[in-house]
Amino acid sequence: MKYKENNSFKTGVKWLLWSSFLTLAIGGGLFAYGLYQNRPPEPIGVRLIPVKLGDIEDTINESGTIELAGQQTLKSPVDATVDEVLVKMGQNIISGQNLITLRNPQKQTILSKQELAIQKEKLTLESLRQKLVVAQETLSTAQGRVQNYKSGQNNDLLEIKKQEIALANNRKRVVDAEVVLAAAERKLAEQKALFERGYIPRNDVRSQEDEVRNAKVSLRNAQSQINTDLLELKSRQIQRQDKEQELQQQVIAAQSGVRQAQLDVATNSPNLQSSLLEYREKEQELKNNVVTASIDGKVLNIQVKNGDGVLRGTELLTLGDPSQELVKLQLSTLNAAKVRPKQPARISIIGPNPKQFSGRVESLYILAKSGDSKGNDDSNQGSQPTVPATVRLDAPTRTLIPGSQVNVEIILQQRQKVVVLDTEVIVRSDSKPFVWIRDSQGKAQKRSVTLGLEGLTQVEISSGLRLGDSVVIPPPEPSLEPGTPIQEEKTTKKKEKTEGDDLE
Image (cartoon, rainbow, N blue to C red):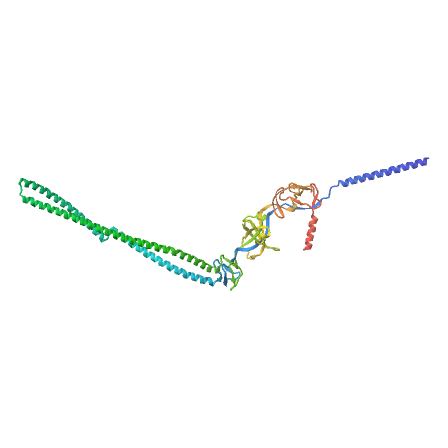
């Protein structure tokens, strides 16, 4: 009985010990699991970028074609034959220099005939002008005769004056004769009265009657002379009027001759002017047979040779001014809306390690045109419209080949010595852009920033960062959260450096 009690006691103690051990094991496991769950996270390796000042640009890239200033292709002004090419490829030329002479014998013959016709018309017109001068002189002479005749510088007027004076004298004589007659008649009446009274003899009366008769005869003679003078004066006046009319008719005839001569001159002058104008046109056409340089520059290309037959509009040669180089662009309408004259540009040859040249936007077409990349009209094929623009290089390179393709980088905006960051650092997932920074405890924190000018790979930070701050480049995995411990990847830098050394 006592043995059974001891076995039962031992068995109970064993179960109690195993229960204690199990409880301790479970509690330790739970404690260890709690420690594991609450352990601090491992720092995430990140790259840090110090905030620095730099320059940033907003640019657009386009391809263009090199041209020289004033570059132009001269064309044949007429149908002709190339007589002689006077210049060589690459030769320097000056404005007005003869470049190519053309030959057109038919037009030379037409010009000679036209010149002969002009000479004939000139002689005819000169003859008509001489007739006009003679007619004007005849008119002037006739008018002078009329003026002189009217002014009294002729015998007819003198005779009329004499006749008028004689008539006036005879009229005085009539008056005197009338006075003498009246006196004789009064004396006769007195003597008759005295005779009737017997104071005088009859002979005295008769003698006085004779005096009265003589006075009457003298009066009649004087009156008769007046009538004769009047007739003579009237006759001379009529003769003068006839003479004046004759001279006036001469003036009228001379005026008619002048008008006719003027009409002949006026009729023939337009004919001569028309012939001269036609001659100048034909002469200019012959002058056009000599193709001259319109600019100072260089011969870039010659498309014809001596003896070639060319039609009007055939390309002859290309000129350009090498002292000024241009780039012709065809901008997309989207880019053209951003471009303005005088914006700076960088020009480079398309290829590896290109040398860059500076320039500025000189002009921008205000009308979009449909065409291909070279500006050829291709509107019927539904091509995208482009806007022609011109960039002028600041200085001639003397190396860029006209007609070659170049890359043009137009600087729309530019900021210098501002805070800039790579665009990959900016996080735009929130309502406001931010960057990750490392705080004093080595944890990642968000920092809101205000963006300024944005370029292709960099962006200006207007506010939110200062010079000397360190910005975290967020890793692709795992994603950062505020408070995440981070550490700079120094080993990565060493590894990259080693790989770089191996590559070298």
